[in-house]
Length: 352
Image (cartoon, rainbow, N blue to C red; front, top):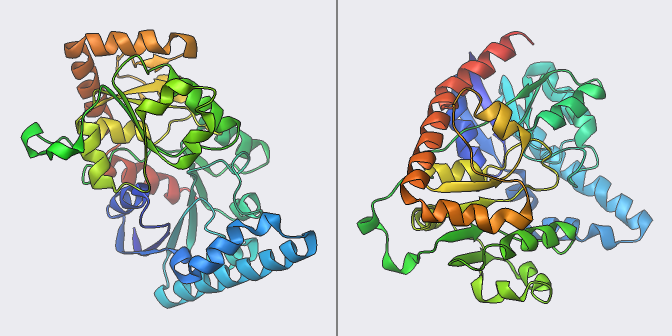
């Protein structure tokens, strides 16, 4: 359908490989471009600190930083000459850059974060007005976009990347990988989002819980001292190691990021790929859209005060847990395979 497709997305993100796999069914040459590599660590660090600058300096820095980023993006686009550009979130795009892209290419955005709730470029929403199609994993985000007049939207679930998350036989997992009944791998926050996450994890401390994350977790230990013994501070853990860790646990809690209103966190898909049961904070789309027609009773956390009881049930019923995880996994692999997603996307783009 397309000769050349450019993906604007950091390649270290697991969603990059998912998007590339989907596009391989509808495009010839595919190239990825991470503008962060071209900006350099110093500029990125300064940009992260720019909110501390005085107002006039902050404005000057933003204009310089975004101009530099967009010049790099346009150079890559001019060199590659794609007929479709797929953007993960905003990638620092300015509206005028989007206007230039759309003159020669289809412009598609995949939203990993909400343009309304999650801090990104100040021009994120404005850039979306130039999209031929906006893909979103949250039906509420879509309703908000439709409300402001952006109707070229599509509910889209990338699925499971089986090259990254897959089942591994026990004897092939290094002993030092460790094991646990319940495992959480992820950063925490210093604001109320962090309190919410710590509150949920505190409900699992009566089990064999392991938490691997950043130093922000420590902020909440005075309020939830029971988390101290479960916590292991760590930096970035590569995907191959996370996959092995998921294979060595029984339950992976999937908390609902407050910016995800109805949708699903990609962690649910990653846990299923490894054959592990995701215990997910209730979200309407998971229940009524993603697993529609499956006939499955999806394990949910609907009330934090009952999270321990829910986890206990699934830990004490091994066979039911394993069968449920496998049924969920099989359903997702079939319904949201790269081929099926490519067909959905191609059909929709033909109408734009």
